[in-house]
Image (tube, rainbow, N blue to C red):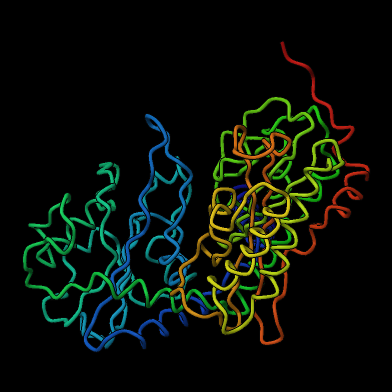
Length: 488
């Protein structure tokens, strides 16, 4: 039988669409957290909630960069942790006990962005209700505009748990049920109409609904501070990608580079290995710039012979590393640079060795600080220990995960927590010490897994010893022959 041209073309079109969709699916990363992970996290949270309570989570707001351009959207870590949903303008409710809604018992509800063909043409496809049902495995899914008619009387709960609002959400009007609208509707439903943006929660009027403003954060911290095996896979990859960035820069470094160029090599390596973002603004500080703890200008045009402090972390599928290395621009530590560097290294070794189950961040800080204080006294930079904080002003450890400073309850270390160990010494120009040390800034930061067998340094891939750094910096770089045309 002869196929008519129209049907032949139709068959070709259908095959092309099916093949394209199949290829698109197979040609995208497949190592994201699975729906079962998020479902398990919701269930664990539910079991830890007080009787007759509801926990309410809102997506992160869309942040405006300038005029009609927004920043790249990043989901609220708690929201992503519990759902896997990465779109804005949404709200999640988790109930401690099942609620009867539309004749069915449900223990959670999620309201998401509605499909919108016009807006999707500009900003990309949305999952919508059907997509969330299919891909994320949440059972009770509604469009955001349905939230106004949510069949829940919040006054019947003993506790309504949510994070305090920061009152920094724009009413963009582009969405009928944007985040601003969802929050205002929620405030109305829990009788928060008289809430004052300028007053603290403790100063708010008495409300009909029993609001719990403090209970949700420690519950989420208890979940997130101990990493599952699935999370550790992603974290380890984020850390190793960050280490590879450090390694390539060590090989590529030369005195004529700019801070921004160094940043660019790091972030190129991040993207090459599939890291979607940086976990925080990249810090590349040469010389005295390294003495600014969160220096992000990165605009020095020529790094000269200074030490270069590089604090950068790749974010891979939501999980962020936090790795810092400090290296000499000319490939060789000077006498004074090496004295300071080796002192920080010794302090970090002491801190890493203290990263044991049962210890805590204060202990790590104490042992590292003791080494640095003694060393600074021996070098004549300070006269007594209490002066040490002048040159080592920050803490030595924090948790990492979905946030670079991840949620935790600040207790003792437990198995499968992952923390940083990051002592530093910063001697700004004009400091009250011998001027030969001025402008030297050193921080060494590694990401360490707490295990029953002792600490495991996830970022050991990037050299830390001064001799190892100098040796690596002699190797040929893939970027050495990479030249772009000169511009006027």
